[in-house]
Image (tube, helix red, strand yellow):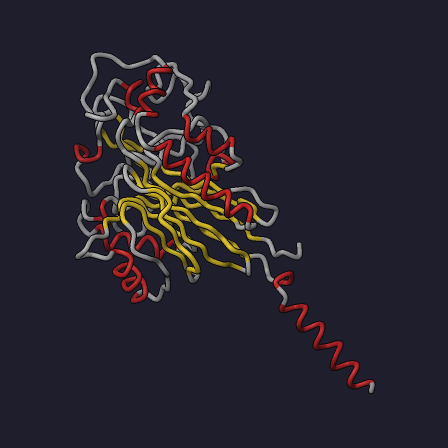
Length: 347
C-alpha cells in the first residue's frame, strides 16, 4: 500500500514537471533580413545569405525581396541548402516577403498583396503559439527623400528640399504602406484574442516617428524637421513596440541605420539613390506586441558598420552595436536581430 502511494506520488510529480508550466525559459532570436533580390545583386550573394543565417542561428527570420515565381521556389531552395549546413528550417512559397522558422509551421496566410506584401506564419515554442509577420512594403513615395531634396518616386534631385510637413506626410500616404499596416493590425487583433505572441519584421521603406525627433532635427539632412511618420505611429497607438528603440531609445546616439549599407563588394553608385544627400535611414524593423511572458533582451544591427553618405562609404561613429558579417554581405541593407526571452508559463 505504501509503495503504491509512493509510485502515485512520483507519477504526479513527473507529470507536473512535464507540464508546460515547468518548461524552461527560452531565448528567441528574430532576424529581419532584406536579401536584395535573393542576393543576386552581389557576387556570391546567395551563399552570403546562407552564411549569415548559419552563423546567426535565428529562430525566426523575416525576409524582404524574395522573388519566388513559376520556375524558382526560393523557400524550397534555401531550406534545402540550409539543411546541407546542418540547419533545419521551415517555410512556404511567397513573393516579395518571406519567412523562415526553426520550428514547424502550423498555419500561414497572405495578409496583404499588391504594392508591397505581408505574409504570416504561426508556430509554437514552449507550447506558446507565436504569429510572425514578414512585410516588404511599397517602395514608391519614399517620402524620407523629400526633406533631403530628392523625389521618392522618380529618384531625381529636386530644385530644393521639401520642408512642408503636411506635404511630406501627404506624399507618404500616397503609397500603399498605410493600407498594408492597416491589414496587419486587423489580422494581428485576431492573434491577440488567441493569446499569441506577435512579431512583425520588415523593410518598411518608411522612417519612424521615433527617429525624426527634436534630437535629430538638425542631423542626417533632416533639415530641421520633426516628422510624425504615420505607420510607426499607427503601430504604437495599437500597442506594438519597436524592439530597437525599446532597447536604444536615443536616436542620436544609436541611430541604427539600416539603409544604405556600405557594402564593400558593391560599387557605391549601386548603393546610393540620393548621391548628394545624407540618405541614411532606419527602415528595417522588428516590432512585437508586449506580453508578460516575453522580455526583450537585446537588439543589434547586423552587417557592415559602414554606411553611404553623399555617395561615399563611411564608417559609422555612433554607439550602435554591430554584428559584423560572416562571409560575403549579400545586400544593400543592414539586417536587424532582436533577442527575446520567452518565460515559462509557470513564472
